[in-house]
Image (cartoon, rainbow, N blue to C red; front, side, top):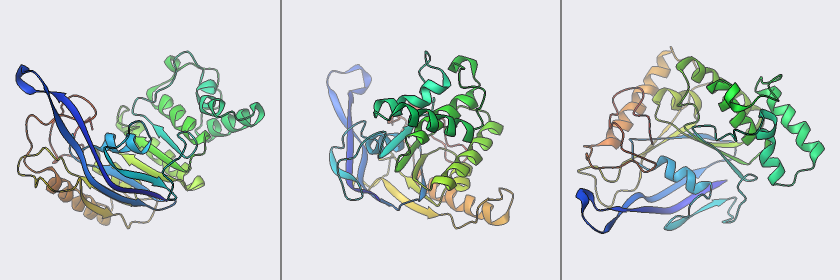
Length: 290
């Protein structure tokens, strides 16, 4: 379904210490990844390992330096139709109502009005947002805004759903509720899903498989090592019991894999998607940026 082969990506940044000139910093190296139809995978790793860069490359928001991304063997695919990306901040248009935000992608694709209206109402209902069709983003809670963002992506009925830490900005209770909602909707559609997270618990709760990425700029990292450090398959039945013994065993396995991927961190290592962030892999939440 989704095939990534030999993907490399670098960024150019100013020389540290106020010097003149620029230097190239490799974020992703030799990424090979196969995601099967209907599979739910999570990407996890220390800050700066390129999780957001990888998912944005899949969404065609930036080309790789080398390598390829294919859907069903095809290099050309349509954002909003074949793939949709849900952002951390929901990305709603503040001057649009909930209904108009969910409808937006369908309008861009030229979907007929009657079909748009039926589909928007269907997904708003699935997300439990009846009665909020005419509300603007500033009138909604953070959790509701994220549900609108998710409904907007699902309404396009993409073959691949990409989610870049969509629940990181909400409180813990809302986050767990949104995780359950996402799984319920994923079970209905069984689309392929790629989910970026810093939370070990979230990755174990949601995923069929977790792909662990390493930070290439860590001290002591083999300069030829690929970005994918390891993979952990989550062979636990759904719904998953967070208090169960097997759940805790898988959590420990993933925590060990993440610690191995982190290595000694370089204090100068930037985050591929933004400013630097804490470099800890020992807690349940590795950091808040990725």
